[in-house]
Length: 270
Image 1 (spheres, helix red, strand yellow):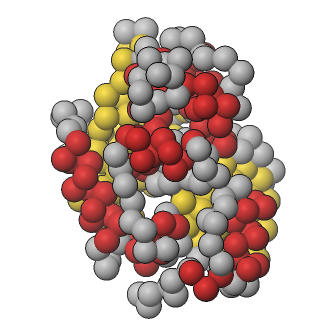
Image 2: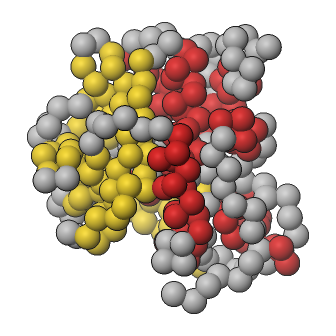
């Protein structure tokens, strides 16, 4: 049994993985520290889909992959792990499912997982798994309030489908995703994960992705295009396939797939 008292969640191993020396307190500062630590250390990535392994969203499988191995995951894994940590640490947390607006005015099904935390008499939106748009810190659940985080500005606003998260990264606010606070059960997550990881039209089936934010900016790899942002600057370069691609994952994102280059499936044609 781990120090957390939960057989599937080793708190010491989790804190070591995200670089925290001690459990954060159940407070706004503690929530901020926990959220930022996970976002800055465990990358967003969907590479198991392209290795033919699929995505297992069982709590134990998520913990083993993201904590005990040099791997990351996407929303169902990253926020699944954060949700486990929050509950073990004593935070009052609940999950929400959201519709992503990849194109303006065109919502997806409920294929994104996020978290609401009740603290100090109000809710906070926590999301460690939205890829290039992942907030580094929790967002106070207050509509039409702008929250600045590094080079991003976020706000929540009302929408016919629920509450919309928007982001302004310098070109005006754009819709990210819309959610409601209705109960979420394991079957809802399994359904969203199945579509996201297997549907031919899913962007996670069509593209390989890795993202790691930091205090300085973000590092993003979409297929073979590497984008480094920070200090108001952007650097782009193309990464060769094969071993050079695996080296990029390891050296920039801390991801070790443990495979030889021939094991990476060719990218499908959109």
